[in-house]
Image 1 (cartoon, rainbow, N blue to C red):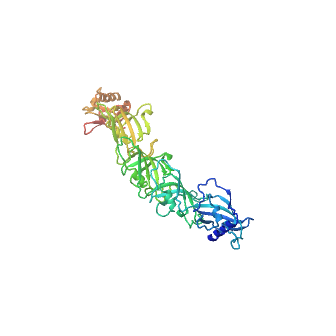
Image 2: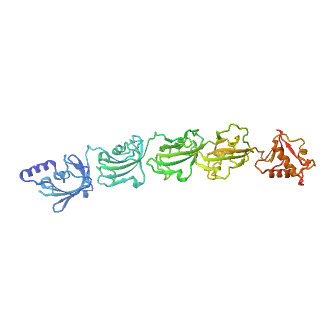
Image 3: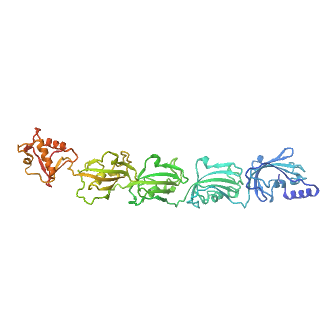
Length: 563
């Protein structure tokens, strides 16, 4: 197919003088539906061809040589003028039959023993590639999110998926088939120049089609067996991640309750819900799916460094979005099959509650009557209303769920210790909000629908108050007991006290305010129990010898009768 350009031109002039010349005949037997560009003089082309005589005998073929023809059209061309002319106007992937008359081929001389003189030649050409040295990288944005918080810049680290193909559509490589992103630094020289330029300015989630001419791709070397020399390459790129090694966590506070009474600090124990996603929105973990909060101490290394840092300063009930770069998450190795290496992670967090192991019960008095002469204390019997909830407002239980409000004696282990403490010192009709940390509530274990390590909020109102007696006693003296005691008890002066006399005497002391009977026990049962304990010989009578009185240091005298 080769011929000296000077000789070819000379032969063409001879034919022009003596003969009426035929032109190249072009038969376009396959034209692609999409043809953004046609071959022009000065362009570079790469094509496969078969050269035959008119009778079909083959004299040359790029397929037999094992590599396509590459050259510039119309400028110091390496091919005969007819073929040079015949490829002009072609589209990539087009197939043509180009019939070249002798004067635009090898003329009257032919070409050695291969091409006879005055021979018409037929070329079947398949155009594989087309470019010009003035070409730039072509970028077409296929999809881009409306909000783009960050664009790819030099020195950034990127993770992207891609399909790589030639202009004729052959895919030579795909990250999707390898089931892994391509991860690299931008500007480090690890990418071809065209890709460096093509992904610059991309946003996470953006899709681009990037067409790269050979001299900005793999040029005359190609890439192994996948990409031939002088190949224009097309990369369809989806940007999955971008970050910089200098990045810190990014915190977006989306909702914060007012007022925020306290912010979390190092050493606090926090409970929070979260959805965890990659930058492209793919969810990889969720506490909601497990129906359980994530519970951890802050600043003790139990969570990734970025989350440890992001939890500092949160308020109960706060919603925040935290973006964590890989070097503050799972680094280059990732975490198993769940989190790939060098992945930026996004956590949408809802802070349910937090506390410190040193926290005490917090009491907020919301209403207190003006007259408050009597307050609750240990061993008192109280009647109260309550609502119990988590700090995020989730209702757990309420006294309104039962026919009557509960009675309870304070200080005798009938309530969780924090609530018991919070009910001390109240006036009748007083209302309080009592915040109880878990170590003064149900601790680290679930209890009756209450999450483990939950801070509880009680809204309480004291309805009734009956002053009580110390644990283990049925009756106490509020003032000095009669001296001597037995004659006062022996109301009929027969030197023995019956159950009826004993009961009447004790009731009289209560009425006169001199003594107090256990408020949490039926008074008749309490009196019978007191009498039985005092009647040492069980003869149904108490004698003076059987009376045993204990006078405490505060002048309070109690019958020595334990429950």
